[in-house]
View 1 (cartoon, rainbow, N blue to C red):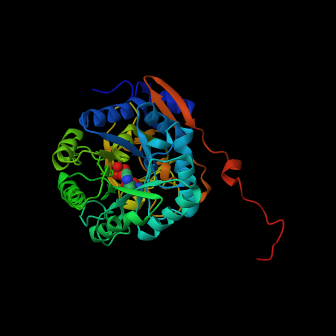
View 2: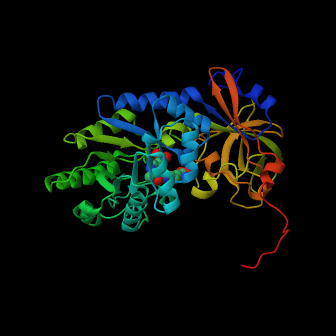
View 3: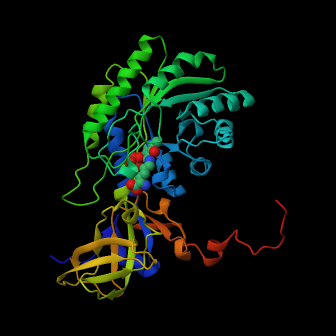
Length: 417
Ligand code: LLP
């Protein structure tokens, strides 16, 4: 049956694209709410906090949605701290992760009172002590463990192997706890592990979390207090229908309940993609169809600077033509206008025949889409729209040319270094 309309969160996408120039991102508020509620109910009864990984989609309207549902933030920069606070996420519900925290960032985070720091190196631990001492405050810290587990995901988004830059070995963390008493301004009372992203199997989670829990029990037996365990993010989503099989939140929660059955403290979750990826689409129009030697190119007005995942990770995103008249199937390379061969959204993809001006929806674009966008090829950042029960609100307007060049200037004064 031919659909009469393509709606997303009750909004007719054709009507929307008639009002707003493509390309733009559209996010379903209800889809995000459903994900939050699903995760919350799966973990009901467990002492837990969900701290959304802001990097997945850092628009302040998305962060406000998180805040409205009691979700905190997992941040990795001062910029993400500013956004989270601006969106109404309380500092006391923010965890600060990342291998490269600077003294400035630590100072700013301590000044507003973030909940805890996920510490990734001994140098950072010592810096945290120095900055906290200077400010006369006590910093709460968790040791990020690198459990040396293969998450079975794309190598560029795998973080839990010993050769990755993240976290420290259990041996090193053991030494940190043994010496923690000597730090006057750091309370090291947590553990953290994040092994990678877009994980579709419980096996690596079981292995990694099992190692973390065994270590926690060892620490407790040695007389240390561990009041929180941050189990990271990484829950995968369905990018390709009939292919990707995400772990249901209930099964993930059941594993966590089983592994941490003896743990009495707070479990922290840092989901990013799981909460927002499938709630977002990138709407784009066909500029032209260009015949090639083997197959035709569908040249669309979105490009790798707007959605980098296919270029960077060979990631699959569903591409759905939204025209309503029935047409035969064709095969295309779907490409953007950027001057790079890697500016390709799909290769040899079967889809119904398209013509110039047709509207396409690129799925799974709610996470690591806009947050990884750039102005490469001097293409202004695109707009973002939030959809909610048939209504829409622009939550980022398209950047103007002047805004794109803001901050740049011709040399006026030449200074000696
Ligand atoms: N916690 C930490 C410490 C992280 O580094 C990350 C993601 C997360 C949580 C959230 O992971 P998630 O639940 O979203 O899998 N740009 C890549 C993904 C990079 C993920 C980086 N860290 C992509 O587009 O696939």
